Length: 163
Image (cartoon, rainbow, N blue to C red; front, side, top):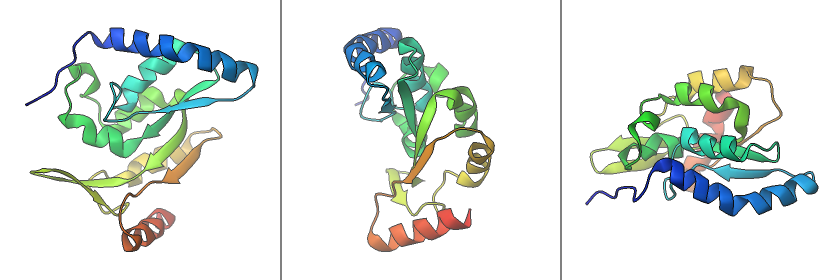
């Protein structure tokens, strides 16, 4: 059974921003930055959806952690079509000014859903995307988040190093 949104997406963004405003104001006063991740277990599964929240809050102390794998695998979720149409590269080009941090993990799409894969060995196709990210200016962080066994993690590190 598919889940659907109970209200308009903009209403979710407004609700979440209201709940985060006090924390963001505290971060501003402390000269710190809060970072929010797009997550398939939230109302903001894609980076372009989480970007809408960062635009709504509009603070230098509130940025986006773009989990590329989460954006990739969110296609099975129910959310507005306008956020589904972009490729990962197109999504990045729209959200890049708000991204402060990247999580890198890879997936294989199976008939039964998605399976974690060693970084660079799944279906995401990171080479072009990382090339564009690397060319961008910015003091941003990238972390490998493979969520697989030890051997797969070692292979992921090797694959990332070779890219």
